[in-house]
Image (tube, rainbow, N blue to C red; front, side, top):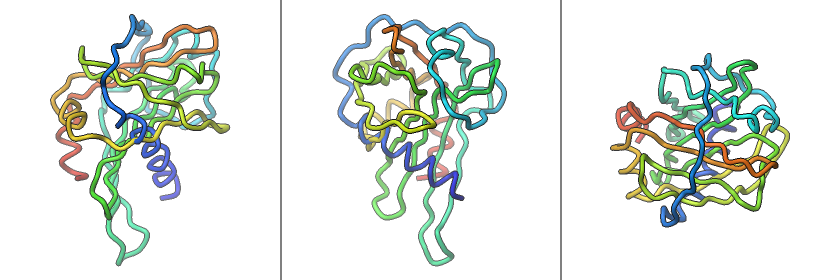
Length: 194
């Protein structure tokens, strides 16, 4: 339960930032060439591997839903998440977590990125070929850097109908890394947590 709650806090931070809007265009980001990775294993993130473009797309299991409650009388807090890891090491590169708090019922996203990023540039979120949303990176700690943002209704609709979410960021060498997150089962899993 502690891991799920921590993931939700991180994801919440990411989507609060993402709620700023999808108004700016994304530059020519390169998608790393890699094989499908095994199930993600939380591990301290490091920039060198991400900088080399060795990140693998998320495995084919797609989005995963989880619900927890602090007690029997407390409302359920549900979240869904998907992650991308390095093929060779299993190191977490991107974790996208979307939760629906029991009190507000407003979806919130939390995105975890690796360490070693060009922080002033922030990150970009883009659904398919739509407009990219610039999101600031809010904080970093030993396991990675985090973005937390509420999800606007129009962005949620794009996620439900889209095919792919691209999470892009720059490493310290100012190389753009774009990680694809499939959205094929997003709408189905979201219906379970809303």
